[in-house]
Image (tube, rainbow, N blue to C red):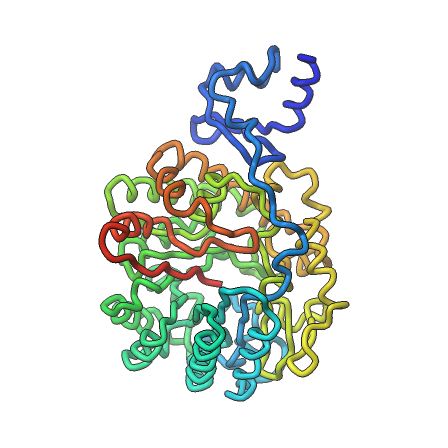
Length: 477
């Protein structure tokens, strides 16, 4: 019996060391525990029953059950590509400046309204979301506002909730536009890669001028308005900026927003800006430095959100296996200016990701592989120790790099794994993080996608429960 227990532990347990701390993680249940050095090495040698090792009991607790595979397969997040035009010429743009291999064009207000109707009619969810994307969506502002009013009206009539989000490069965020978006409750994702030199090198205007100064001014104005609490600043790192820590530190210090998303570029391997395996050491060091900065800011009482860290922290505290990190083609559907339906905005133009059109609705035959991926996971993830929490990475990246949904993009896997390891360390270094999640977010349903509330807001939520309450912030697409 003792030998059987040991063999089971050898199969189910992953032993980890992160920045001088020691962990045991249950691969099947996503339960984990921090151990001292001596206990960790004893467990590695498996000379006794694992249950006898002090501190290991949480690893063997049973997790909450997953939702039934048939639940929640209707779309609930709509991405409206209202403008296939852009006023910047970003060097790493994978969308052909909004054209996605076609021509410059814009969505009509009528098509935008029809797309909103499609979402309400296709979904059985009580909480819906509409995200405006491009190109640059503010170049078609009236279609944005008219369809947003239509969405709010339908939600009120049908007693549903709908959240509105807009992803912008920030150039057109004049005060009047900010006020109009603020009045309707929009949240924003605004692109900013870091200091002027870094940002302008990759995000110029068509005439070659840098855009940093323009966008910084707009962000500063937004920060003086209520909508400022609902802004996420999103940066991108490339092969040239793989050691990206100074760029994120700049964004943290400038406080354009408490919410930061800083993510790797994903481009064809032949692109000179595409990340390579050789860049991994620089990227991992940047994440380690960023983890230390994150913890220091929590200790000093001025926390910020880095969405990928926040998400990993919440998943580890919840310790609840999730089916998918990517809801593309299931929870999420994108609509082009012509009314074509794609699995998500990033997959626009990929034949494998074209799932129908507004006239005929979703083509369930074409959608079936995406639904099956959501139900059953990726074949290529079967032996990964993190499969219960990771959810398999991005569907579009799987197609782009592996020509199908079955296997994840391995370089992306390594980045996700590294962030989860650091999240374990952060929870140990600052236990209040675990307390905040347990008290405020442990019940969050993120089985179908990303975290929706930044951890720094937990402190506000705790105070507001004794006062008046605040609205949750929105996570970017």
